[in-house]
Image (cartoon, rainbow, N blue to C red):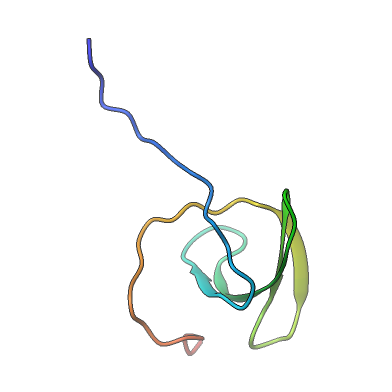
Length: 71
């Protein structure tokens, strides 16, 4: 019997990539500044804050938009 299933795959980040996280505690615009097998390093283009997190994002869509977005 078939069921409706949501399938997620890790996002293939690229150093230099500009991303926007739409919801959650990591919301906002980020620049990918480093990668390892398990971690992604990001920099906020507004504050300059740098963070390193476990790879966490999944692609929901790709679209043309202003970056960084005005606050």
